Amino acid sequence: MMTPLRIAVIIGSTREGRAGDRVARWFVDQATPHDDLAVTVVDLSEYDFPASYPAEPTASIRAFVREVGRAEAFVVVTPEYNHSFPAPLKQAIDYAYDEWQAKPVGFVSYGCRSTGRHAVDQLRTVFTALHAMTVRDVVGIDLLAGEPTPQCTDELRRDAAVLLDQLRWWGLALRDGRAARPYVS
Image 1 (cartoon, one colour):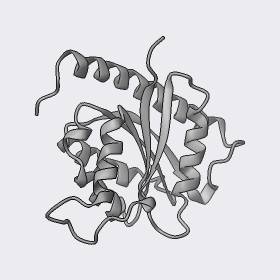
Image 2 (cartoon, helix red, strand yellow):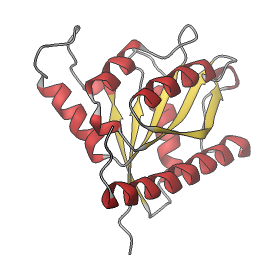
Image 3 (cartoon, helix red, strand yellow):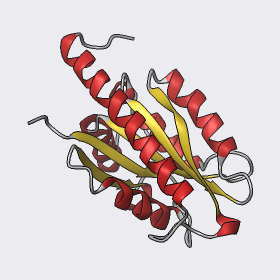
């Protein structure tokens, strides 16, 4: 039996009243039936990150970097704020470097009308610079139509299934690749 692929679902918003935790919970529910996936939630609001980048990593930074290092694939749940992604998400991403390399990243984005696509476009650039592999398909949620629920549209469930399929394929391929030959940037 194959070891399940370890996926970290990262909630990228820390705002009070955010939809990110509910969107992430919905996505985790989509992934849970898959025995070949081990899903953990990494909620940035649970980390006490410093206001400015410290000379030495804090305990919270080290804990976050360990979570990134343990994961073999990622799903970033991000809102779109002013045609971009939240600053706390960028701060967290920057705390890790080697830990992102040669691992796939997928996106579940949300916003009003745009479904968060502008945030995803910018995040693709950031993760490419970190030598991560972003998967093509995205789950995009228009909050004006409501948050996803267990009874949400077939289209959203299909989008989640496609994202999970792509993440699984790339995650397993890159896991095998890293085992055969460590990634060097």
